[in-house]
Each structure stands twice: as structure tokens, then as C-alpha cells.
Length: 346
Image 1: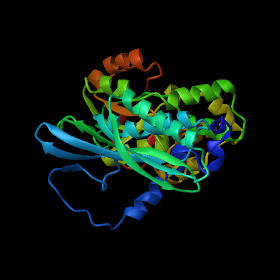
Image 2: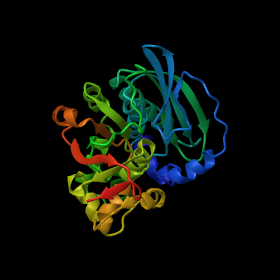
Image 3: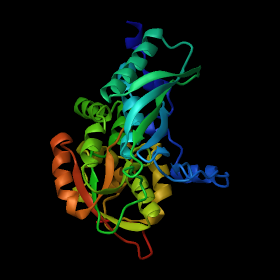
Image 4: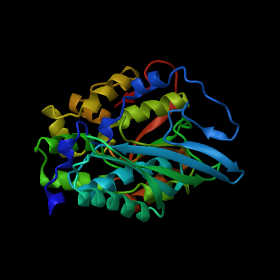
């Protein structure tokens, strides 16, 4: 069939969340824009959070986010699944449940109709798996295909999670391995093993729904999903927003072995360098190997949740997470900030 011959990733300059504007550049672009105040706006764009939150009543708040990017897989159906998984994740990171979604799509005029159909079907199937609905959307013509979702969800105002609530003593948990950006970069160069490709696709199409459902049963003070800014970029934002420091034990982080080997020979996405520029001034890398440092800055697509859990609940939460998310890890701790670097790698 015609759509089977199309190589979506060859139509894109950047893949997935690696196409995101760097966190430092984004902060500069937003600087000076007037922020209107509303007592019901609990989280807005003046924060470095995953989604906005607006209180409707004492028991209900609206969570909204939008996310889209160029192809990270050649198969249109798979690309649609990955893009939807990634967009839905922002609501899960706030402790919310996604309910309504709108398609956002840009396609070349020459793109086969069946390929477009399969991309949309991938998004629909993943949204329905999340228990949400697609109710419409917007599409334009563009030289480079792009797809994603605007997602609306709900959360109790007193139970929402942000990336700025971490407290000294908290335990840091992570729910997916790290290295997806390196793997997808290698795939574009035809240097990735079939096993590595299958792993990347499985991870990028795994919803953070199960992790969220486990997380909300326990005392959790902060959460963010690890996507385009990498583990250290998102971790640095959490440390800054919470005014704390963090110790991350590199050996406890599930770094994908093939990604480590690829990083050692210099197979790295451009987004890794942007993330390093943003976060490195706040990171004490110690004697961590350079390739492992690189992976900590690696932009993830549809990555896992980084959770700051209360110490008395951390073990029970980790045990439950491992029952539904086998790769869940305990990667570090949160400490008071006493000046200097925000994050220490050990």
C-alpha cells in the first residue's frame, strides 16, 4: 500500500520532543509578558508546569495542556499513538484524569490520505485507552507533518500536583527508563538494533495512567513528566520551583544499555545540548561518566513521571508502581537548599 512506503521521520528535521524549544530560550521568550491574575487560576503559564489548572468549584478543577511534534516513527499509526501518549502525560503529571481531547495536525499536501488516516487512528486508539474522548480538532497544510493533542482533564483542587512542591526528605521516584532520545536519533541514522527500536516504541506508547493511578493513593508533594527537557532539565525546574536541592544516584537510574553505548560514540540528539546549556549551571556532576551525563540531559518523548514522594509513603508507592510499571526506580532524595548547585549526581 502507498502509506507503507512513506518514511515520516525523513520528512522532519527533528523528532518528537527533541523538537521542543529549549527551556532557557522559552523562559526568555515569555519574559515580560503581562500575566493577568485570577484567584481561580491555580497554575498558569508563569509557572514551569506541565499544564494549567483552573478551579471550577471547591471539588473540581480543570486541567488543560497542549502538545504536538514532528514524526518520531515512520509508521503513521505508531506516530499517532506516541504523540497522543505524550500529550496525555501532562494531565497525569498534575494528578488529573484526561477526559476531552482535540486533534492538532499539520500535513504536507502530498501525504497519502491513508497515512493521515492511520496517524489519526493511532491517536484515537490511545485516547480511548486512556478513557478519554476526541471531540474535534484543527488541521493545516505544512511541508513537515506534525501531530498532537489539546487535552482537558479534571482534578480535585486540593489534590492537584505541581512540579514546585517537593520538600526536604522526599524520595525521588522515576517510572520509565532514560535514553529514548538517543535511541530515536540512532534509528534515524539506521544504527539502532531491532530490539532497541522495539523497546523505544513500547516505552513511548505506554500511558502514564497506571503510574498516576498508583501515585494519587499516597502522599506525593510534586510530580512532572520527563519529556523534552530531559531528566536533569525537568529535575532542575522542580528543584528551582520548590527551592530545594536534589541528590540523584546515577547508578539507580535505569539508563537503557544500548543508549549508553550509543552515547559513548557520540550519537546524541540536538535537544541534549540545549538541555545541557539550560540545566548544567545548576548541576554538580561529580565524577559521572560523560556519556551517562549526556543521557541525563537526553530529551525523552512520552517519558515517565518524576515523583517527589513523602518518605513514609515512598516504599509502598514504589512497590505498587513496580506492580504496574516494572521499570519504576528509586533514584534519589530531596534536601534543603543551602546555596550552590541545585542537583548533585552521585
